[in-house]
Amino acid sequence: MGKYFGTDGFRGEANKDLTFEHAVQIGRFLGWYYGAKQGKKAKVVIGKDTRRSSYMFEYALCTGLMASGADAYIMHVTTTPSVAYITRVDDFDCGIMISASHNPYYDNGIKLINGNGEKMDEETILEVEAYLDGELEVPVAERHEIGRTVDYVAGRNRYIGHLIGMSKYGFKDMKVGLDVANGAAWQIARSVFDALGAKTYVMNDAPDGYNINTDCGSTHIEHLQKFVVDNGLDVGFAYDGDADRCLCVDEKGNVVTGDHILYIYGLYMKERGKLLNNTVVTTVMSNFGLYKALDKVGIGYEKTKVGDKYVYENMVLNGHRIGGEQSGHIIFSKYETTGDGILTSLKLMEVLLARKVPMSELAAPVVFYPQVLKNVKVKSKPDAQNDPDVQAAVQKVADALGDEGRILVRESGTEPVIRVMVEAGSDEVCEQYVDSVIDVIRAKGHLA
Image 1 (spheres, rainbow, N blue to C red):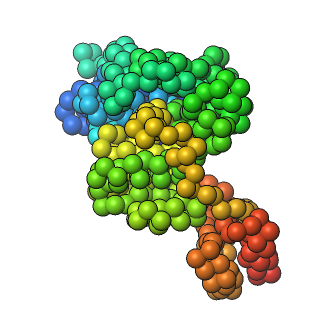
Image 2: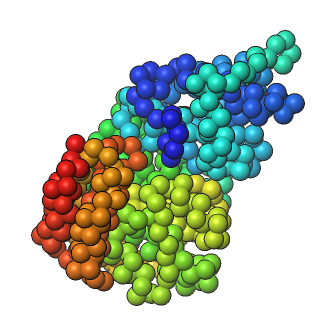
Image 3: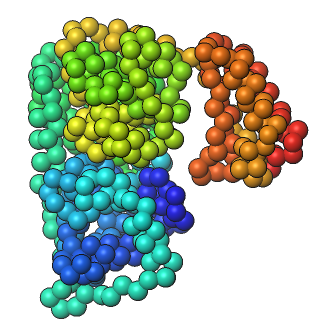
């Protein structure tokens, strides 16, 4: 991670951490980097979510791009995966998504996407940051070289067509609930499900610039749980603000997490001979219950660092077809380069219709182990993590748990904290083992 950009873009409170000026500069750099630097005119596509500040950042980015000679194609309110898809299939030099994902409305972010529809490489990000810090000079375009903006709502429509084409079944007679989080999916998701014939029930589809993710969407799925039960729906899907993640609710109102989704679709792929390498890619935060369920059906798995970026890198490196996070970032590498909440919901509908059993039955084999996670504020993350006595305490817990649980101790990527997590047969056991490690961290003087 760089000075400004984390694993998922440059994110912070609008006009406090991430400013209008930052956006202009990012546009200036990208317009030059993909254009004049290579002796051509750059083409860059931009999407945004429904935050009020997204409009400000959209115009700021366009200003910077045009000043450097690039043409900016504006998709307007759309999802992160739609920008990744259109960047790739319509041969743009790069894409930009303006969103802070599941964060509150007053935050925003700028996500950069390369010409292959993937998250921008670290080398380019570092050059962007060098320009933000005044370490590089970028010339302005003049006369006929100045860029323009192009309305590109056609790109969003093309993406909707792509999603509809992904479904192998019509959804006639299926009652489906959608919580679109007052975010980027608010127009797209219903259009897709209606076109496929579902009886679609939508909630939180009235964005006002301030209500994105507010008590709704995948981070507040309890409302969809009630909505599904109250309306007697077959299934429900909840997205986050930029719709790159999806969680599900079964017909009984139970939450179907990203771990459940990996199991359900991974097994479906295996049964049809489509699970290349017989492997599902997870992160270290997937629940122990997922691994137990995968073991029972003979499916292998890999574990990456937290972040869909790392999941995708592993998939590309090893040729795996499905991977994701418990939070609902699910990647189907045959079709897309990033997590796509709407595609995920369509793939779950495919299994539901192919297997002809309720969602609750599909998810039942994944039984979550109780989990306790505590954050410990420390003076130095590396010192605390690498302390021999702390490591010995962690190993002692691991030995005690054996194959009936696990312990994970990791550094936060954004805060001065160590996260201590235990999964075991009961909450009491989890608490006991987590506290035993924290006691050692405290006794060795690492607490801040």
